[in-house]
Image (cartoon, rainbow, N blue to C red; front, side):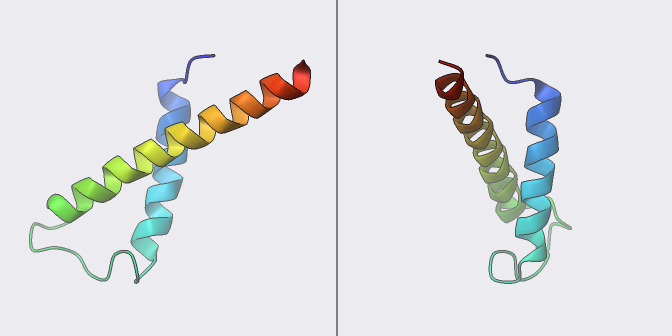
Length: 66
């Protein structure tokens, strides 16, 4: 089953908001007004985490259906 862009965006947004809200992960806004390398790394990590989570859930559902 393919991941829909909307699905990945929704989960990635939720993961990213959790990371940004955590002072241990994101202690302060960069000098680039939230568009610096640290923010880009967090965005990439959130997208990868969302894709991985969706794949794992879909895989588990397929196993359950068989």
